[in-house]
Length: 511
Image 1 (cartoon, one colour):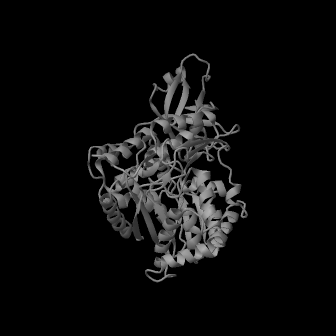
Image 2 (cartoon, one colour):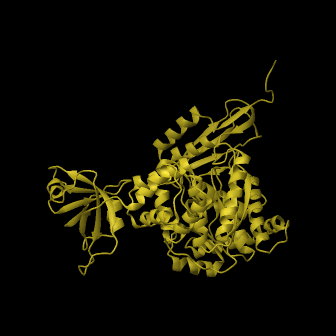
Image 3 (cartoon, rainbow, N blue to C red):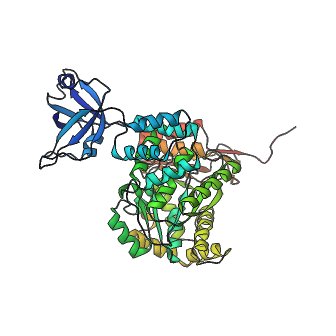
């Protein structure tokens, strides 16, 4: 049955349409039923693919007329409708066969290769609703998956979109996340590219953290490009830092990420498949995986991180990617800044002032870059760190970063001082003298998100003093930045209730 669409100007996590109750009666639909919408081209032909949505009814409100359906923004955009082209065909739709496979995984059954491909294909095509994709995510969280299933997941996710062939020597770095302020990619990429290696870095936006690499890079330059422009940037600069969601690379992964965000879930099987599928899409042959270990990360203990690393290396090898994993210290932030703009500032400061920047940011960046330099044969085994340090100190990394920023449409002459940060600032002071004995990353992330991260890029926090620092009563030990006074108040309230820095005198106990 054909309907004219009306854009409601409303947003929802779900794909929802509003239908007049008389029309619903005619097609035998009731609230919560699943329908497939297929829109008509301007020449009157129907598109081959449709989108599945859920029906809500308008009961005498006048919101929609008979023969008209109201669409939430996500559905309107997914169908690519316009004021001149807004006619759709709507048919009742049964649950796809892939949902049966999802429920099998929820019950702990191993899925076949065909079942996994069906699920991923339906994710890409929009045949599965967000709540059904969520069931798949939770199934993997609870039941895990075999290595064979993860290989199948990675292949299915990679080939749900375009896969680039950039040659045999393509390098990359990835992180499992969890540590605040992990802006090392902004330093590693220009170091590696300055050494002559090809490093096409695609990143996601923040899922559970205050800032993802794409969020921080976007402060400096555009990160959203079609595939053709990405290839041009890589040809010109040997590197780039892009948001993977814009290139039709592993679109199934994007559908899964949209569900993982509200669930605050990132199951290990999906994490492995997601990382590897992204590398496959960019033609990566060799990579280093940063695995932060510590309280508040995905790997609270070194042993857990080690087990994951061994499994990741094995699965990557089965797909044809050589991976080296580094277990890294996640007991406190990398550098001092947390939040998109603040992290971009800190990374640029280090590139511009190698001898004055954050020691932890410098050390971690050069250690990870060293692995890639050795894998690429531009440094002998054991000599990668020295070369990475030399490239950073010589200014070659800064020069390369400016080339990348220019190629991606940013200002190549930008200074760290030019990067704007939140205009509302709270300076939190030490209530007594002593030594910082513990940094609580979870609370740092929470405060940054309450301040507005990652959406409000100028928001964030600065951890002025870290573990081992001596402070005096009245010293400013923590700063909160926000563009919203209300958000700043919320962040301050949380800070006061959950102090992210613990400190004491040298005496532990008097007996």
